[in-house]
Image 1 (cartoon, helix red, strand yellow):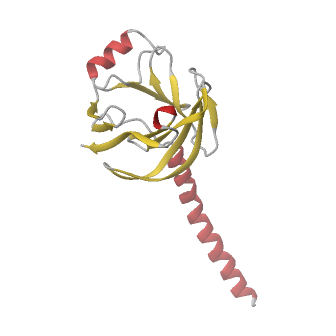
Image 2: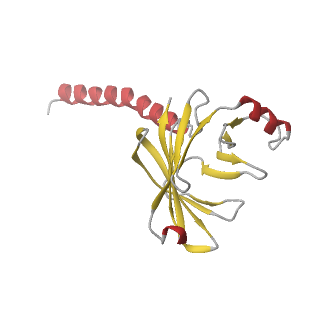
Image 3: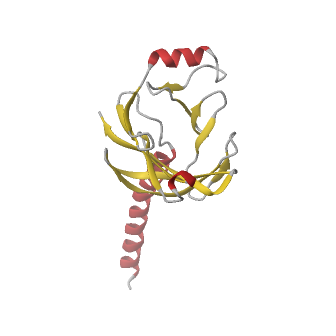
Length: 191
């Protein structure tokens, strides 16, 4: 190969590399800033198969203010409360369900095989990130979390969290289901 052609090839490679590197970093940074919190502007309809009921969850400003009043979080900010009486808080370390003591639903940054223990003694493990279809639609980059409790080593639940949507599906496998994996909760509509 002639020196001129080699130089052109090297120059082309350098140009392509310098253009694609920022795109790779941008994608990595975007993935690092993904939220799994429910969207305050949406109304979520869930089907709870364990009690055969359907219910809606939407942002509830009044409940948000009541929870903040009790200062479950040091600054009383960052809560998102819904009409199904669930409140969530999210920071750079994870997504929490806010109760008398926080229960860390997801631990950030999201990585497959990341494992942690909650204040309830549950062991939670991110087992996959994949596309999941529920009645409300098909969601990509869904974080799959397997939850086990110390009181029954055979039992577990699996929770599915979609980016910018939150919980879309929960399956259980325990003595009540005769240790068969069964849908407990499913997102059936978002408006």
